[in-house]
Image (cartoon, rainbow, N blue to C red; front, side, top):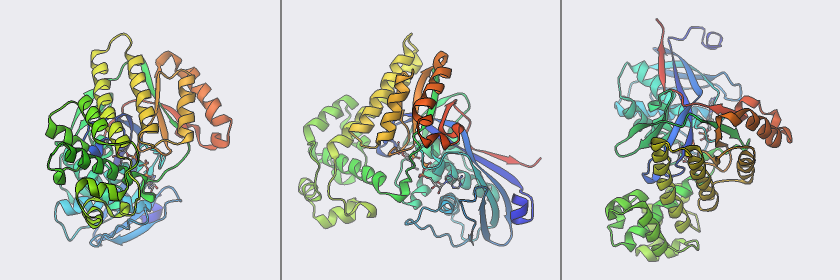
Length: 434
Ligand code: ADP
Ligand code: NG1
């Protein structure tokens, strides 16, 4: 296909994987550690550098249209999250990091098999793949940590204000191990998953493009506002606080204590912008221009108590999950399953990022043998991840397939992309011609 598109052959190939987040949802952008692993599905880009300063992009999937632009004038339209814009995020991130104004062009053919808008990070895999393509074309070098940080920052050009989980695992993943990803400074530690269990991904078949809606950015903003109100309540310099983790760090208390402080400082009724202004002693104008992001300036109601409760309790669950994996007691799989179940309840009730199909799928997975099941990724659609005892895997797959997919036209979705067991895969790679 490359040959018929561009009349030439690729000089090298780059792959970057998607991921499944096992536990730790919507807490990376609050500064807390998360526990993902890379999946086998990935973005693969075939590349030929050219001398024309033109960037030509094509895709093996005809739904994603060809695109071409000058490599020296990258414009990313936040209002339309078209596929090529994700590529441009990675490209621009590397270009800006090296302060380059005159970049060589390239022909690229993209081929991806991560189900899109399903919480398995197809978008970040594309951004990371494009970043590594650009670095390779420039003949420059960066560490995996630097690449992850650059791509996490540059994916914000698409309009969503995510944390760095997806880009970090796409670069730092290693075959055979999940990773605890910690931030500031970014680092990844191996987490050995129990050998007696299998992690199974099931797609609810509800797609949710984050950049096309404001759900995601509203949550980011609610967490920021909750952090500021908690800081004010504790007489901390709230103006400089942006993340819930900073409040904990400044107070030097445990996550359990942060949950008690949240009970004390915040109420469960939604906050209006006016009430937030009264609490912080600022004007509506200051709230809009100095704290809220452009896409959230007109939101009329913010749930701060619920979001803070989710974040602090989920951050604690991540640490417990890692501890159980390390200590490996006899009932490891049951304990991990319970933590995953608690995570789903918190995502559903406190963070309100589930949907009826995901809740139904989680129930079906538990009914047919999963010790734990939860939504994974941003939510509002997309996939679940379940922990299933290895000996129950065949019956689990058959029963879930029958109960969720076969009984509806969901069985039209190719089975491989809907329901599959997964193992920790490796990170991004460049394949050079010998
Ligand atoms: P995810 O949870 O998978 O990261 P997003 O909604 O954030 O979902 O991003 C999905 C977008 O990523 C798609 O709408 C598309 O623009 C882009 N994308 C996903 N897969 C591909 C692909 N194979 N080729 C090109 N673009 C893709
Ligand atoms: P996905 O599942 O790719 O939409 C998003 C964010 C993550 C994280 C999760 C929720 C991006 C690129 N990714 O992931 O950083 O916040 O939601 O845990 O914004």
